[in-house]
Length: 136
View 1 (spheres, rainbow, N blue to C red):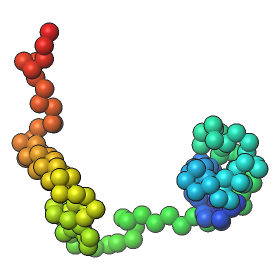
View 2: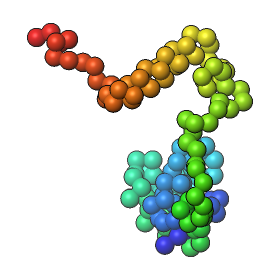
View 3: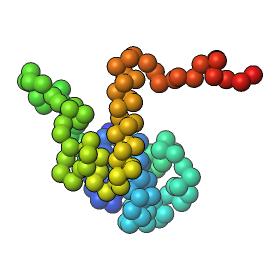
């Protein structure tokens, strides 16, 4: 069953998602979500989603949750580009690193990217530790 958040009326697909929405919003922003939980579910911060779900669902109105999935929206056969294939966004520095990074951090990030590419090209898993490298 779908529910509307009792604070902001954002639809959630089920009681567990509603519990997570309320708790995460309360923890991240405080605001009315935290006040509502404090008023309706004492001890909510120590409870998990499975414990919160039935309690918050009792206080929420039913709602329609419009679930949209990519495979139901598009019926096309053009290529979808992955994030790694895109050029850096505005404000990015060399190699796609955020401009806020200093020169040394950008260099370390570029080196890490190159090492990752080389590892993936070789088909390795990145574990270069061998028994010969270990001391008994």
